[in-house]
Image 1 (cartoon, one colour):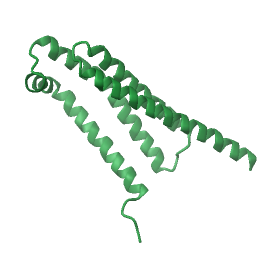
Image 2: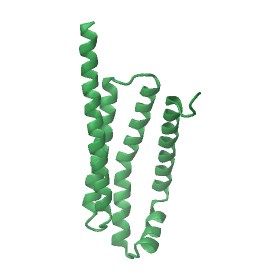
Image 3: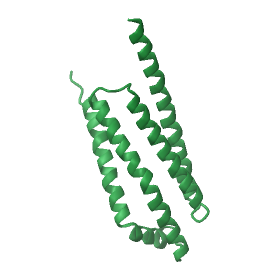
Image 4: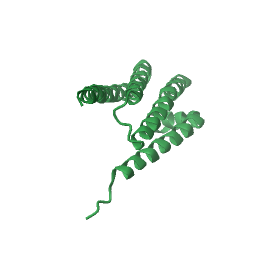
Length: 153
């Protein structure tokens, strides 16, 4: 019996999601002011330029690591599709993803003085950085073990 879900379809889904998040990020950057105004007026009921401007600045600063992260994930998926799994480039890409999460965590923590809910976003980004960092360390170990096995044969 053939299974519906395959490795190829999983990578394809990941690619589609990376592209979808990229499109959503561009849309959020283009409509940032309107998004922030909507959040201020309807969700948290804060009014005033201080709140809106602080959230908008946080959003645009966090966009930079988000674009880098999405591009790195795209390259990582390209490598996986080419069966390049335990290679140094993937370690570099995972390290970059981890640092992007750390950057977003720091930025959100700084702006949490105005928006307390950004502290939760900061915690989530820091936790994701930890997870990606552990996976990166697993890749480093696997690359080292692969190199040792290649030398013994």
